[in-house]
Image (cartoon, rainbow, N blue to C red):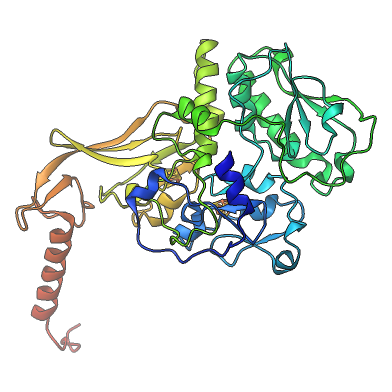
Length: 420
Ligand code: SF4
Ligand code: SF4
C-alpha cells in the first residue's frame, strides 16, 4: 500500500522507451502514472498494441467515461487537455477493469484479506461519505470500476455470501456514471457465470436501492485510508507465488526503461477463471463454457510461431520425450487473437466461448531430425505440397526452390509456336 501511494504521489510520469525483452520483468511491475499526478498507472510493457503494433486493442479507450484516453496504435495515453489538469482523470478505474492484460492500474480496487463478517457483503462508492455506509461495507472508488472477475473473486473469497451493490441514485449524474453502463455489464456477466456454476439466485450480485441522506462528496477522493488493502498476499494466495502483485508498482520517478515481458500474467483473466473454477467445483459442475474461449486447429505446420507470440502463455509448444505438443489453456487466454494474426497457414480459429477449463493438447507430433541440416523439427512440419521426406520446413522449402529453379533453367527459352 505504502509503496503504491508513493508511486501515485511521484510526479515524473513520462513513459520511458521500451527496450529489449527482459525475462526478469515477468515478476516485476512497471506501472507508472500516465501523466504527472494522474491516478491511472500504465505498465506499457504489458499493453497489447505496445507489444504488437498491429494489435487493435482499444478497450481502455472505449471504457473511459470521460473520453480522456487516446491511442495512436501504441499504448494509450491521457489526452493533451488532461496534461494541463491532471485531475480530469477522476480515478474511477473503468479503464483498468476493461484491460485484459492488467496494463492499467487505479488505486482502491484491491480486495481486502479480512472480509467483513456480515451475512451480506455490501459495496459502496467512495463519493458517499463514510459515515453513510453501513458498518463493514466494502468501499471502492467507483462501482463502475468493478469487473465480473472482481465480483466473482469477492463472492468466492467471501464463502459465497450475497453481494449487494448500493445504488445511491446518483450514478447518472456522476461523470463516471454513464447510467451504470459498465457496472451493469459486469453484474450481468458475473450473474450468467454464477448461474452456470449452479449458484442460487438469491446469492448473485445485485444493485439495491439505498438513497443517500447527505450530499455525495464533490469528487472521488484521492485515496481511502478506510479501505484495508493487502494486495500481494491476496493475489499470491489466489494464483501462486509467480503471480504479479500490484503492490510491486514502481515509482513513476524510476528511470528504468519500460520492458516487454516475455510472458505476462493476465491478472483480470486469472482472477476470473481461478474464482470461477473454485465456485464450479464447490457446486459439482464444470466451469461454464461461456467463460472459456475455444481454439481450434486446422492444417498446422508446427512451426510454433503462434505459441511464441502468445503474450499470456495460454498457447505453448512443448517438447517432451521425442514428441512436440501444441497446448492451449483457455483459462489464461485473453482472446487477443495475436496467435491468429501471425499464423501464416491461417490454421487457427478462435471462438469466444465453448472451450474447457483444462489445458488441451491441440496437436501432437513426433520430433524428427532433419536429414539435411540435422536440426530437430516436429513432423509433419511442412504442408503436403512442400514436404520433402525427412527434412525440416526450412530445408524443404529450400529444396523446393532449388527444384523450381532447375526446372525453369531446363525449360526451352522460346517455344515453338508454329506447332498446332
Ligand atoms: S485495454 Fe490494456 S492492452 Fe488494451 S490498449 Fe488499453 S492498456 Fe493496452
Ligand atoms: S492463445 Fe491466442 S488469443 Fe489467446 S492469449 Fe494467446 S495469442 Fe491471445
